[in-house]
Image (tube, rainbow, N blue to C red; front, side, top):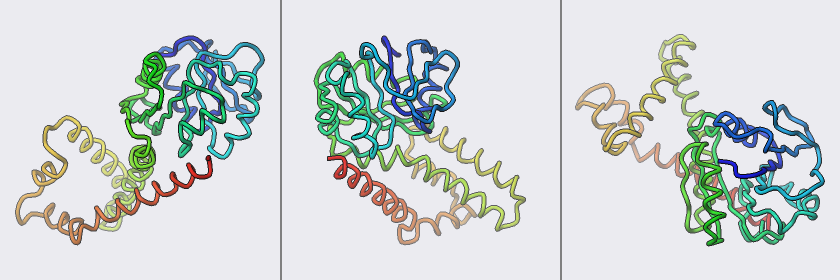
Length: 265
């Protein structure tokens, strides 16, 4: 997991989710320092400071700030630039080359986790243009307790990965909410519709993960010819409505990631 000392710069929603899981999975809180001027709540034993601490550089530096804050934090990192064995960044859209240049770092790994890392069931995509095995192994060990980890060989795909798995939970939360609202519209009490929607999505996702069948084949298994499920699927499948909606949704997120990358340069 965490080897040596780790500094977590920024502890917003995603930073806090990763931090909580690391500590929950057995990381030594005393090895972690959180740097955040907002002074958020952190797990017991974790050191919390408002500014970059004095002293030697950490073994791992995790950047969990907003992309727009990179220039500001890069200045405060000046005394430690080029000395941290691993810089791991979750800044959406900010490319490895840009990070390396602004931080004078040679061991940079980009990571895109999603919010389910808080319970160890997240998805994290990793990319690095370094071929140094120790840096890549350290990044992998750091992120594995958070859930599924996927290395991406082509950084140009990172914007698309971010749109799908990074933003994907938000889109699924919207789907669960819409399923609940639709259930209410056809007569269910709201609390019942909410519980049924959440349990249905949870069970279906678990089944899809364990099955050798594709999601499309599983859908066909549920839908018998002339039945109610097929009638509903016909609405979703008409003119590829659902596929087109999700493609447009992911494309909008991907374009924004690309714009953030351009601004970061």
